[in-house]
Image 1: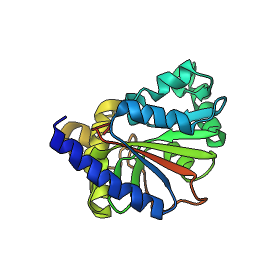
Image 2 (image 1 turned 135 degrees about the vertical axis):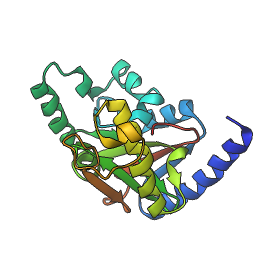
Image 3 (image 1 turned 180 degrees about the vertical axis):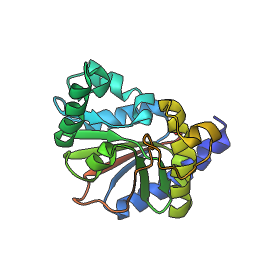
Length: 212
């Protein structure tokens, strides 16, 4: 990454940390993946049950591998042996100690936008798990909430449809078709603008491009 981009991300990251803290979130800025992984593991107690929804950014910093290798109790639905077991794991995540997620978009004033298909990811972010850790690359950050919503719908959703292999209009066109398809992944659009109770949601902002 060019030094100019590193400085750009760091300056915006410092602004965003302060704005998130003013909304009662915990927030940390990390310059790269290694630092972000270290911070994430500091925030997860040993022996904790840990679940995650769509959390590609957390995966990219090596967090899932570290959880499987360490003294933790990961709830990993990718290891489910049946549809029923997978669904039970998704329900179990609502009561886990720590839930990991990402952000489809963030505004510089400290608000997060997430779009979900089934709803398990946004549901656990809102209520249930004792602690929520959001790992987000600085490529997710937009100047305004309106731009963050636009990013979530027109950038993150089409890319995730490509990743999941869903036969939705944006998979073919690369742009949001405002569809009502059975496999639509834009069924819940949630804005998280404030943290209650204080500090339950923790942001790890990474000065790299992560996720979609």
